[in-house]
Amino acid sequence: MFFPIVIVFLFVLLLTVFLYDHCNRSRRLASKIPGPKAFPIIGNSFHFLRPPVELFKFIQSLSIDYGVVFSLYAINGRVIGVAAPELIETILSSVQYNGKRLPYIFLKPWLSEGLLVSNGQKWQQRRKLLTQAFHFNILKKYARTFTEKTEEFLALVQEKVGEAKTDVAPLVTFATLHIMCETAMGTTMQDDIDTIANKYLKAIEILGNSVVHRMVRIWLHFDSIFKWSTMAKVQKKALEDLHVFTTRIIRERRNFLKVNNINVFNDADDDYGKKGKLGMLDLLLENEKLGKIDCEGIREEVDTFMFEDKIYQEMHSIFGDSQRLPTLEDLSGMKYLELCIKESLRLYPSVPIIQRHVNEETTLGNYTIPADSDFCLPIYALHHCEDIYPDAEQFIPERFLPENCEKRHAFAYLPFSAGPRNCIGQKFAMLEMKTVVSSLIRRFRLEPVTKPSDLTFKPIPATAANLIEISQLRRRYYSAQVYAQTQVHSLFLSLSYSGGTTARHDQ
Image 1 (cartoon, rainbow, N blue to C red):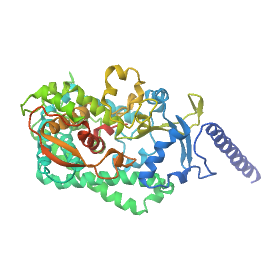
Image 2 (cartoon, rainbow, N blue to C red):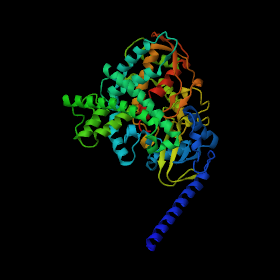
Image 3 (spheres, rainbow, N blue to C red):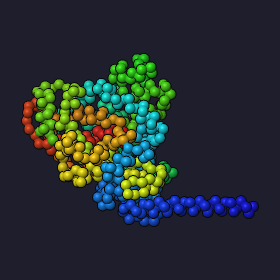
Image 4 (spheres, one colour):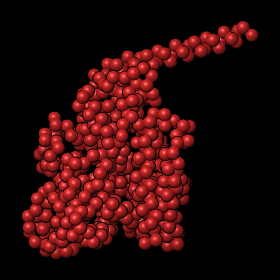
């Protein structure tokens, strides 16, 4: 009897010594990294007990106050902030730091093991499978759908002409959902599905709010506690609305392929896309037949997607007085518009923060990073750094001329992330934005009501906390008139924050 007690005692003693040494070493290493003052046990948890807008400001201020590498500690783990492009390159380029934990785990009730959230072999398999669906040869076939859906969007804008002010974000959001469904999903959104789609968009907003709600309340990080909260009940209803929409989209496309006896690709020559405009959902459904993904996996991936004068002169040089729809060649020729879109994504990245998990102790720059830490990459703060972008708050599209890009570190601009886990749909997103913005500017003169200086943001995903409004959307006739660059600023901001669904895929 005495001997087993001794064994148990020694085991507990050794375990205690190991845990103390491990935690103590982590504290010693982290203490060498600057950061806000932390308290015993709770660490910096109290810093996160802020309203979403204030939390966004706090996160963006850390690299200014403590330098390009900083440390925070909460009850459930340590966060190492990294805001230096050369160090960010080390993190994003290495498969060693490909893993994700916080805050992505809060998205698992929605996305489960989808591309954005999954790790390891599951992520590698899904990434390889989905990359084919966003090949440029496939995207070329989407050009007509882009323009058709843009025409429908412009008709909605036309209805707002003459109103004192219009919140353009809902119009853009609904248009991007239509485009995604009819391209990547291959499903036409009929009138009867619009109500479901509206619930879907509202549910996405609720899920984003739920993530922030859990982030700032450390006790809700634990599922066993969160499931009893009011927010959990709200989230459950939102998830039901999300899954009703995506399940219907998948069911309708599966039936269409079956009834029409369509094979997405031939295994012998992998001729995916040779049979017409086939999208991401078709590819997933075909791989379901091959046993590479199940129905649940398909739903996870479907859930995961989802300056005016010079621009106008550029449009006029391409189209003249013609009202024809833009072709893929036209979109490729919109060089100045592309500069403006890139500058908008610098000022207003749709994903302002991305995180990566490190399992083992590692060296980064002059610091040794404790094992089991989360790297936090503050993209918004990086994009607003005066050392990298002089006059960072100013809208200057010429920053992205080739000769100016060469002067900056390649990882100083990350609207679509970078490395192995970069955004799989970034080319899709750029073509979509070019189509919508170019068509809108050709038709209308835009006068912003909301000024950039009036905007406040919520952190995950980055959304404006106030309305993005445009006044007096007036019919633009096809003549070479000159308007101020600032008139289109609000539109770009709206696209960045309401139409960036694809830009968030796998970041």
